[in-house]
Image 1 (cartoon, rainbow, N blue to C red):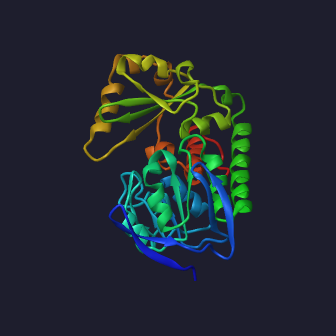
Image 2 (image 1 turned 120 degrees about the horizontal axis):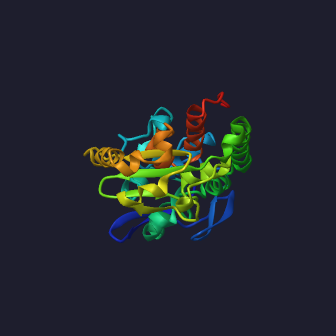
Image 3 (image 1 turned 45 degrees about the horizontal axis):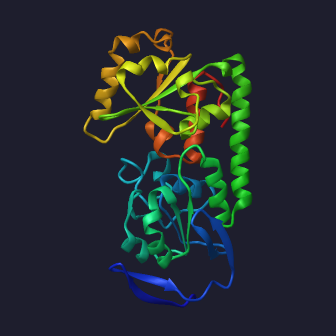
Length: 305
């Protein structure tokens, strides 16, 4: 058993490993190099992406942050996480709960958790990816390496690529369509570009994008008068609804606008509502497959599942 001593770090009791595991590996990540157990079994996931990627690798985390706007888990992971302990919010993990779980590995994210890296590392070996967006495939490969399941991670990525290739072939010339993406959020709406999770799915399949979205970057604010920039052959929209109806109201206001009604995609009946969970907030390989399900539904393709 690893020897540990209790100490206080910024007012919180922490456990500090004073001897390395007998079987350990060095993992290089965005915060440095960390020695992790050869086969960790008590893993805490601090992003929605990491949680579902672990599940796809056959690992149920002992702790995970709340799925965005869920109580507490997204529908597509809820059953698998029945025995998983909630460890706070993605932007505010509960360190005391994490400590109580006695994890042997913590998966975090620099953009969200850089400020608490030292505190997490005092609890258990902690490794980070840079961010969660269109780099989700690289993140899955990293998580797989960190938990000692690189072969399983590669198999999962290969299965995704095979699905994408089959969908691309089934689409035929329709793969050349330009597909726009807009997200409704109370108070501010966003056009999603190529480096977003949703943009990466479209890019993988080979779809074009409206010129204003066919560029690097995650997303950018878009105002009502810029609605024409969304136009293409098809338009997908999703709403980040927090329960106050604000996103729903934004969507209704925009769709009633003459500018929206004048879009070629609207006139052709090629506007499709899709899940915000799937296309924006979940972010992992399970969501990627659900997004492919949506593409098959929208284009009336045979299922490749």
